[in-house]
Image: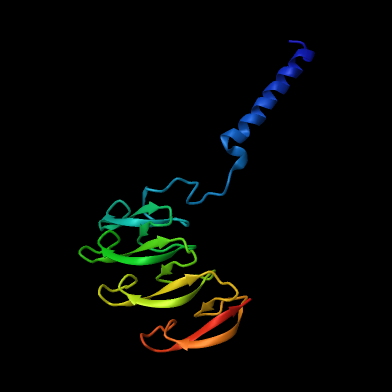
Length: 196
């Protein structure tokens, strides 16, 4: 084929290859994470960063000897998932008990109902991006069945809201004493009117 005729063909192949690259995803590659590696639902001997697990199987698959070792059912953390441990960026609003997360036969273990923190959510723990304006008592967040524990009504920090803690970057213009923020039932504590 003459050189003059091969140039348009080469240009056509180059153009098609350039178009195919973004469509294949190779040009938009992102670092491996729980959302891109596809391990959700797999059974594994360890829990990689970015994953949680919702079941444990005690067997010899992951054992280096003749004893049982834990094997974990991996899950990508999402809002509403009940998992055997919490995950960065999430809080939890309930703790349940059962055998799914246990690594000892006949021993129950707790599991956590993961939630994405939002303004107004009542959670078993705080998170740095939020403050809270009320502590309630009940069994939803208890680490021991039947033992009441506290839960925190999360609030996105904003000027003019009352809060139990002054978040980073804020100050306060007024305080009040009541039992809203008490870690111990019936004991008054300080609440702050945020300014920021």
